[in-house]
Image 1 (cartoon, rainbow, N blue to C red):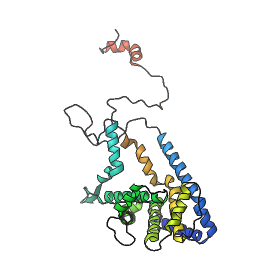
Image 2: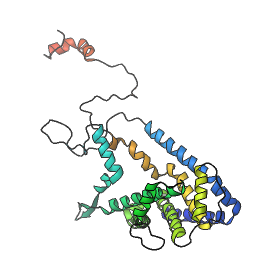
Image 3: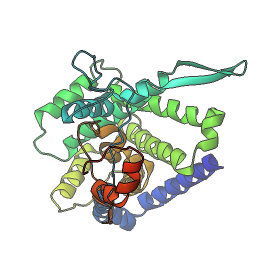
Image 4: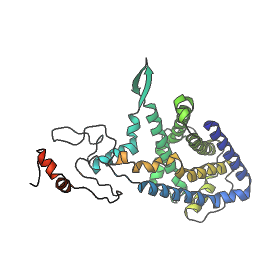
Length: 329
């Protein structure tokens, strides 16, 4: 049902985009007003979620540890599995962000003869890394529309991405990688029963929305070419806060913009916010130094404590009669 609902939502959004693209007045609103609204919602929502998560109390050191902690000098420790300081924690976080280290260690579980059997499951790690890496390259390549003159490293990245020079115009590796990863992630979620059972509307909607952005972009590049000069004029107008007329960019470009702006506005309120929330994860970003430092919960309400001195004064006679040692005779 969640899959059907997400397909219906994407279909309605597509029809809306077609209607906007067919109307000159609505196209003007789409290119002059909606970009700033979508960006403002994205920025404010992103900052709000980060501030909300950042203000959540974390009274204890609770990093996930699965290796030897720092102990005696002759005991070998695991600085990434069990970080003892800020640098080890930073290295662990860097591997999470850049290489999806915990996902690489993901295991497949199957019940064989009533017993759980564990095996390697690297496909999810590979396609997740391919998806995020391709998406990053595509976003960086699109910066050519927002700057003038074009920064040399953007040209270098585009040349590297189209190294094989397949087709005319060139098919970028990041475009092919993104489509391949989207197909895998969607089929995995829709075909595997246990994943389909826990999948929500937002899980499918995110994949379909990104697929809509990718497919309309590829169609404009390889099937129905858009006027790149008009697109760049429009993008430079957004960047300089002086939006220009859309020009003859076509209905497909309006569909592409509708998908992109919907994704931007929806991003902070969806699971896609893991992009920012990862850096605030207390189980990944903290050092395991509870044995070396005393961590006092700053949110504890002040209470009247019963010190040992007061305890000994109160039960001195009974402790002395029982033969217990006393600090004060």
